[in-house]
Image 1: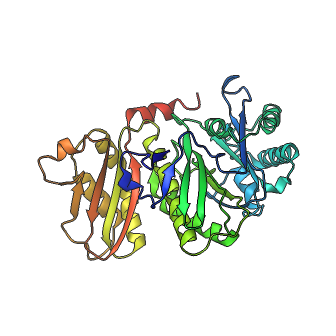
Image 2: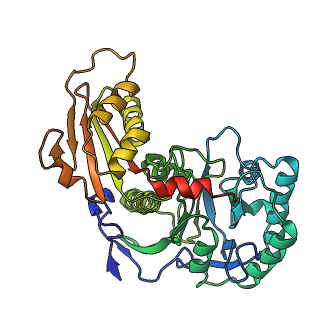
Image 3: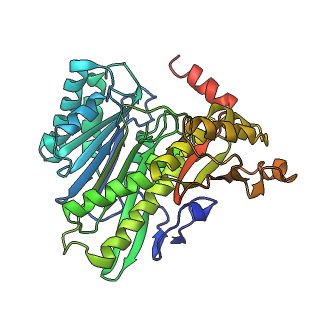
Amino acid sequence: MSTFAPVEREDWIDPPEGLTRIDGGSVSTPAGFAAAAAATGAKGPETPDVGLLVSTRPAVSWLVDTINAIPSEPVRLNRRRDRGGFQAVVVNSGRANAATGAEGFAHAELMAVRVASGVGCEPAAVAVCSTGTIGEPLIMSDIEPAIDAAAAGLGAEGGAAFGRAICTTDSAPKGGAFRLALEGGEVTIGAAAKGAGMIRPTMATMLAYLTTDAAIAADDLRRLVQRAADESFNRISVDGQMSPSDTLLMLANGDGEPLAGPDLEHFGLAVCAVCRWLAVQMVKDGEGAEHVVRVMVSGARDDEEAERVARAVGESSLVKTAVFGNDPNWGRLSQAVGQALARTRGIPPDLAVTIAGCAATDPGLAEAIRALEYDIEIGLGRGSSRWALWASDLTHAYVTINAEYHT
C-alpha cells in the first residue's frame, strides 16, 4: 500500500485523512464487483475494445452525463432508465454510436439485452456507453460476440483489462483502487476512466466509473456523485470541446447500515478526491499535452463570474499556445479576462496576476514556466468568490492527432 500521491502536485488533490492507494488495485477491487474485456478485432485481435463491469450483489447507483444538446444514443438510452438502479455497465471503444439515429438507439438496446442475458439481470439495469468516432454505426456482428466473451470471463481481477478496453486516444488507462479508514471500519473505492481529447467542462469525451463496497443510501449517493462531478470533471479542459458521450457512473453495493454523519461526509470527500485525481490525469494525458496549468480565479463577485473567467483563460488558444511555448506573454491572460468580462462595469485596471509563483513582471518568470505543471492565479478584486480550472496546453501533436484521427 502506498500513500495517496498519484500526481506530482499533491495539493491539487487534497486527499482526506485515511485515504490510501492500493497497489495494483482497479475498478473491480471492491468486494462484490467483477469485470472483463474482450476484442471485436477492430483494434487487432489482441486489443480489447469491449469492457464489462458488474456488481455481483445488489447495488445502488447514480449516473451523470453530458449536457451536449445532441447526446449519443447510449446516453439517450441510459436517460430512459432508473439512474439509481444500474447493476452493470458495458462499454465499447472505437465508435461512439452518436449521431446514428434510430439504428444506433436499437444497437444500444441490443447491447443491454446481450449483457443482461450473460450476467442474469434485467436489461434496464445495464448502463451502455460508447466512445470513439461520431457518426459511424456499430458493427453488432462483432460487438455481440465480444459481449458474450466478456460476460463469460468476468472476475474480480478483470478491472485492469476493463480499463484498457475503454481507451481511445489515451496514452494509458486511468484508474486504481483506494482504501478509506472510517470510524465504522474500512471501505474500498475502485475507479476506471478514459479521456484525452474532446474534453471540456461539463463534463469533459470522458467516461468514468467508480465502485465501492460501502453501504450508501440512494439519495446520499446521488448528492455526493453530483458534488464530485462538479468539483472534478466539470473543472477540466483540454480542447474546449463538449462530447456527446460523457458519462460518470458510480455503483455502491455495501449491505450493511448506510454511512451517516461524519463517516458519510468523509466518504464524500474521498470520492471527490478520487474524481479529482482522475480528472487531472485526463488533463495530463490530453492529446499531445506537455503542460498542465491550474487557473485559479479569486476576488470575483460571484461563482458564475469566477468560473467564466477561469474558463476563458484555460480555454484560450492564445494562452494555451503560450503555455506550450514557455512564453511569458502575460498580456494574453489580461486579454482573456477582459473578454470574459466584456460589458461588465467596475473592473480594476490592474489585475493581480501570479504565474508559477512569479509576478507577471518578475524576471524569473520565463524560467519558472518551463515547469510541466504550475498555477496561474488571477485576482479580480471585486468580491470573495473563487473558482479553479485545470487545463492543458495546445501543441503541434494535438493538431496532428486530430487531423489524422479519422484517416
